[in-house]
Structure formats: C-alpha cells, structure tokens
Length: 472
Length: 157
Image (cartoon, rainbow over all chains, first blue to last red; front, side):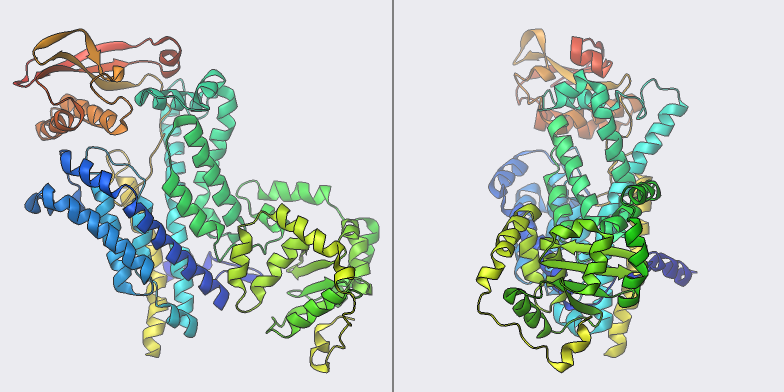
C-alpha cells in the first residue's frame, strides 16, 4: 500500500518531454550553491541583533516552548546565552562546511532552539518556522562528492531538494486553503462580510493596523477604496492555494515565487507586516531553482497555469495563429527537425559567430543539438512562419518537443545555451542577477558591431566529425 | 556500497512524501489553537473581521495615584502599543479568563505584568472591546465592557 502511494506520488512529477529529475552536474552544482547560501543566511540571522536579543530575552519573563523545556532546569540566565550561541555556531558550521552532516545537524538544532526562543514570550510568529523545516530536510542531503559520482545518490539528492521546495509551497497552499475554509464557514453562518465581499482586504487592513496602533503606506488608501484591494487579495489567495501545484510544474516555479514575493511586499505596504525571511527563502529556493531554469517556452508556462491554463492557451493560439504561408511550410521544417532536437541558428557570414560555434563544438554537446546558418533554407522556412524573426539577425534557438515549438532569441538564447555547457552553470547564475532587458541592450551593441569586431577572422572549415551537427 | 547508495534513493522516495503528509496533518490539526513549532498551517487572515471582540487593558492607577482618565493600552504612555506580542498575550489572557482556565490565566497574567506593563505598583483592568473595523477606523466607535480588575494584590472583581 505504502509502495503504491509512494509510486503514485512520484508519478506526479513526471510529464511528457522532460524528466523533472534530470541528473546533470550543473543541477547538482546549483543545489549545493543554494544550500550554502541558505546556511550563510542563517548565520546572518544569528548574528543580526545577537546582543539585543541577549539583553532583551534575558530580562523578559519566559514561557518556554517544547524545544526549550530544558531551560526549566538550567534557568533563563544560562539558557538564553546558550541558545543564542548554539544558533550562532550552528549556522556558522553549516555555512563553513555544508557538506558535513554534523554541521547541518548543528545548524538545524541552532535554528530550532533560536526559533523556539523567539516565540517563547507569549506569541508564536511564523518567521522562522519554514527555515527550521528546511534546515531539517537539508540534514538528509548526501555529500556533494557522492551526489556527483553516484547516479542513485544524485537522483535522491534532487528528489530531496525538490521535497524541500514542496514543503515551502505546501505551507503556502495550507494558508490559502485555510482562507477558503474560513470563507466557507463564514458564509455558512451568515456573516455579512467574507472573503467574497469587496471590502474583505480593507477590513483585514483596518483590523491589523488598529491592533498595533500603526499606519502603513497603502493601508489608509485601501481602507478608503475597499474594492481596489479586493482583486489583488483574491489573486493572493489563488497564488497561495495553488502553490503546491507549482512543485509539479517547474515552468511556473519562478513566476509563482515572484508572485508570492510580491504578495509579501503587498502585505508589508498595506499592513506593515514584514515577511523578509519568507521573501529570502522563496528567492533562494525558486528564483535559482535547478528545476526552473529559463528553458520553458512561454506557451508551456501559460498552459501550466492552474485553472486558467487551458483558456489562456486557447486565447494565445487565437492571437498568435501562424499565417497560411507558414502552415504550408510546417511539414518542410518538420522533416528537417526531429522532436526533441534543438537547432542553433547563427550568422554564417560573421567571424565572431563562427568562432563561437567552433568554441561550442569543442565542448561536450548534447546529442540532440544541431546548427544551421541564418542564411540557410531551414531558417528561411522558420522565418516565413514567424515573421517576427526578421529582426533577429544573430542568434536564434529553436526547440521542438512533443509538438510544441519554442524559440529563443538574443540574451534568452544565450541563457538557454550556457547551462548546456559543462562548468558554465555558475556564469549563468551570475548572469541571472542582471535584468534581461539590460542584457539585451548589451547583446544588441555587440551584435551591431559584430562584423567590424570579427574583421579578419576567417570562417573555419567544419571538421568531418562535427558535420553531423549541421543541418545544411 | 552500491546497495547503500540505492538505499538512499529508496529512503528519500519514502521520506519526502511521508514528511509532507505529517506536516500537513499536524499543521491543520492545530489550526484553531496555537502552532506546535515548527509545524505551522500559516492560518493567517483566515476570517474576515465582521464585529470582532478583542481584549485590551487600561491602567487605573500607578504608584498609588489614580489616573484620570484611565490610561488605555493603545494610548501608549506606559506601554508599547505597537507590540503585537502584547496584543496576543492580552487576548489569550482574556480568552483564558472567559474559559476559566486558571493555569493559562496565571501564565498570561505573569507575562503581562512582567513583560508588558510598567514595573510599578498599579491597578489595571482587562477590557473587552467590540467594533466594526472600518467604522472604528473612520469614527473611532467601539463598545467597551470591563472584564476584570487587577492590582498587585490580585484580581478584585
């Protein structure tokens, strides 16, 4: 029975055309980088306000939560400094040697005790709950060397990391579902105001601001114009309810995390409730997630959107329907490019582009990669189908997967290409920090000057062993 | 060695869904009470406030001198009205009083007097207020009901 349930559970992570748990070095690199950043952040929390916490918590009367029951014997005078030191050195051990399980156990204990101390004065807040759960899950990661060497260990590590992401998302889903249940209960008992009334957010904001006798940047405006806050509020509930779905649809991980971060910022601006820890956790585990690299066509992202995906896809198809001319040439392109293949189109008369292709060929390339020039017949067919490609005159990446076509141009193409090269994951992570529009500006400058810059560079003769990579 | 590595994958495949299930169940079973750390349902903003009744407090005398008018918690002369922890303690104290849970009453009274209220000789009062949030925000209208009086000598209501 358990085996059956477990198999059913993991089957949900599989979908046609892409294995969620691709076992490549670059994904493992990314995971261990995120894990190290996680422990460094814990260390920052432990250091930040250490002295203030020591002074404040030693002076207050304590109502210890279960992880601190030992303080009844040790006394608060010894217990508080011990907990703060454990948080500090536990997170330091995690940040210094995240590969050691002992360090990770110590970091988890420090996090659990520190979180319990924060909440042992009459009110439990949620700021470090998720961090503690994540620290617990990360204890079970294997050593990096084992994960890189052993395929089974690597597969396990990827699943464990995915499980950690699922924990974070499940928490949001539970919060969203709780709101829906609360609304159902309020409707059933005939309350005049529920989630489905336009003043729902305004009431929450007013209540919260009066609880703390504060005001906020947007709060008074939302209270004065209740209807304006209602739709974003419903949107936030939607994001929360379907958060767990995103674990199974990696094309949505980054956009969903962005939505949740914006929700937290919205809560801060309207109610003065800060969720900075949650924002950091979402950014770490989803903005740089190994499962959500920029490799998903926009149409797939739209199709994956819970509830509305099918309607939006239909709208997309109606709006971006290929022209008649393109439909006629579809089979021509289909004969040349097989499903699962990716074609890199480059400027065949540009010296820099040719050197770039030679550089790519010198690396270990995925077997489904093909090259073709922008001056060739295959690209002409593609351009006929997508006239927007007229302006893309340097790098175009075309991918065909299970009947779904995706096209990436300029920086987005480079973003897709770099992680395919062994050892280039870190560069991609660094480039991720720069907004795409800025990268596109830089890319266009180089593209404009490419013929001048590539003067004197001769087009290389393609060696026989690489000829199979070229379509024409 | 090989089987140990395979064992790791098998372990993770059971461990992850099991942990998720436990987290879900424990989080939701505590949704109406308080969290068992580190399990949390994040049951925030679940009910839209219609006519909430919450507890607050007011100081009637300090160091033997009567405060006229009494100092309300939200006035913030002797307390920190922006302290959300204080707000929660006052409310859990009020709920414990209404339930007659003497253990909780003792605990929260100690937290209130030692962490929130000024450490001076004082008489104070727990007050239950009921209001419509939007109306209170705009007009300040609330209805107040005194629940209990306390002094250094203990409750005298």
